[in-house]
Amino acid sequence: MGLNGQGFAIFDVPPLGEAALTEFEKLPLDKYTGSRQRYRRYSQFRLTHEGGAWTPRVLPHREFAQAREYNALVGGQPRSFEPLNVVPEPLIRAAAEAIGLDQDASWQLNVHQVRIVSAPGVKGVAVPEGPHRDGHHYTVTAVSRRHNISGGETQLMPPGGGQPFFRTVLQPGQAIALNDREMFHHATDIDHLDDSGGLRDVWLIAVNPWDERRYGEEWEAKVLEGQRASA
Image (cartoon, rainbow, N blue to C red; front, side):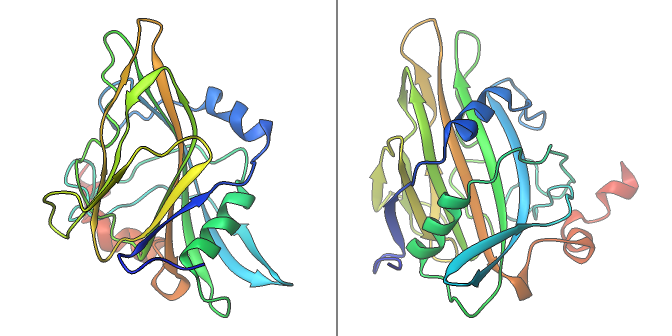
């Protein structure tokens, strides 16, 4: 398939099964967002194309390390998340095809399963760091569920921010893949429609060539800037 001339693609998410949807109900609180609006699990994979299909293999679990230059809010510190209980293999394969990944290369993936909630007393902040890049080659956002909410609009904008050149509200079963090196992206906050509260369930996938992987001790030492030693 491949990305369009603007560097992104909208694609359909294959059915992931009831187990994947049920797991959203069990996600632990993301303690790094400073509120109760975000729940998350996270795992990392090596992706190769074998026997005519993309094959993800889970890597030994490590803390999440993100450079401060891409996330001024919580970058530059190790973040501990529990690993995924289910692997969204159909989504991973669909994302690889949507991006048009080189089948002769190996790739490294960060995969996050995230629930964002909005309720009385809980603001549904979708992207705490605001419009940004993530510092990867490609990123993917896939929506599994929207319940009793407005908002959650995906926006793409020029590097550095500014007026979006593309905006859409991804519906359940829809995803967007984009070239993270060529644009900023953002998602607006969600707001519950009544006092029973609402939610948005998403998968976030970051993709990098294996030789430029965001994984392992060398990567962590590069981006954590001695935070662990000084904590």
